[in-house]
Image (tube, rainbow, N blue to C red; front, side, top):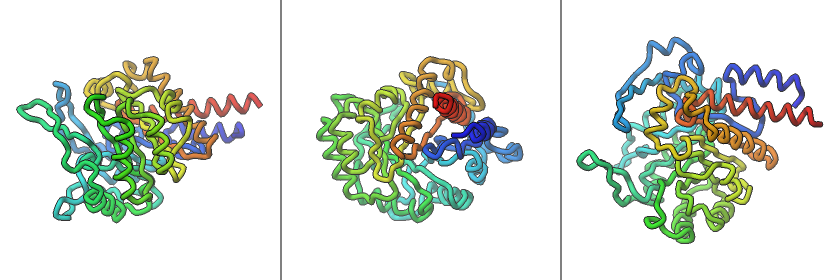
Length: 352
């Protein structure tokens, strides 16, 4: 990249325009409507349109403050893609085929997002989780999921209506499976056989990507199956998973999605539970030193930067998703990685 182009890119990144850092990375965030991002991503006029709700987590109570869905138009003036995760919690149609509230929420996104917007949608846990968390007597318990890998229901209640609403603006579907202890899960081989029976019944478009959160299932058999089936492996910086650099080695230093897209999700600090990460990052309006100034956060940024250059070397497109909980403020995390990418490009230019 010429020095003049690097200078222009740095100027854009400094003002949180992350759309054209390099052709092989598309920056985005996990969810988008945080009122804490007013002044960063969203104009000041949204301060008069904030909705709020109370949330209890880890024995503490937090106020979650959101801007309206129409703000997605402003979001895409800064980012190249958006991961929507509310679809993880409920399908788009109910058992009778009637639209759920999520159907109408996703429709609003479709109405307000640019025609060239890129979305990554999380598939409902109802069809991909082995067990579901429920509360009984105020305590969490886990039950077997009766809809686990029900391809017919998945297609009718999520996949088809999602395509109906967003069309070609869906650039990937994310299938996330919960953490499982070794004794509670099948063998890696049996797991692959079970998943294969599900995915062979699904369309190849939009591109599916898979995130398993159990390290013992991330074996050579699994990665070979992903490559053969053309499914994307999601590189996830998450509580109980190995660092992304280790995941890169485990997968055989390859990208497996048939369409050449890659998804990496920077979610929580490693070895830190969700509630603790949330509390440390709240209220999400700036980088949190207790997270961002740690050695593992430094390594996360380096790993994400390295993955950008691996995508460039293999002519892939990396969708890099930042989460508030991994840094304190997702936009600043994305900007920090973008700055590291530009630093490395400048170093390589000087070395020529």
